[in-house]
Image 1 (cartoon, rainbow, N blue to C red):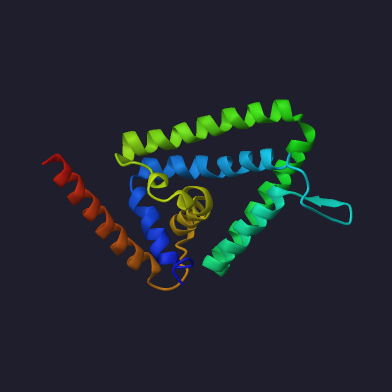
Image 2 (cartoon, helix red, strand yellow; image 1 turned 90 degrees about the horizontal axis):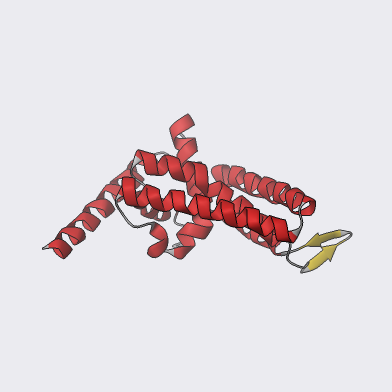
Length: 188
């Protein structure tokens, strides 16, 4: 259950994304990172062909993301799965419209811009190193889902189950307090 413990994972993510400006920066930049990575993955050779449809790394990684998100939370995960596949198909259309030599330049520029924005969000506003330094899986696999979950919580008050937000907030506060105590000990 540890891998699918949404409360634990979301609390970990939330402890690194507690500042409103940093959260907004991540809301804007996380999904474009996924989308532009998918563009490059469309240039990989097919691993399998079903009829006339070639299925490459982009398809299989998108499928993995989608199934993982659904396993974390059926409702929000289904929306995240839909959005992940929507990005996959849209990035495929874009990849087919561009040459690889032009696409990688666009992807590189977008990735640099988006990652720089996130590092600024952590350094200037959150004043805490990003979670990817402590958990790489969080950064690359779970971040798109957690950004969507934050948007759903703030816009429509979504909770995967009653009491989820309260439990997660308590864990986030405890994690932040523990981190602050460690930081104070380092400075002493």
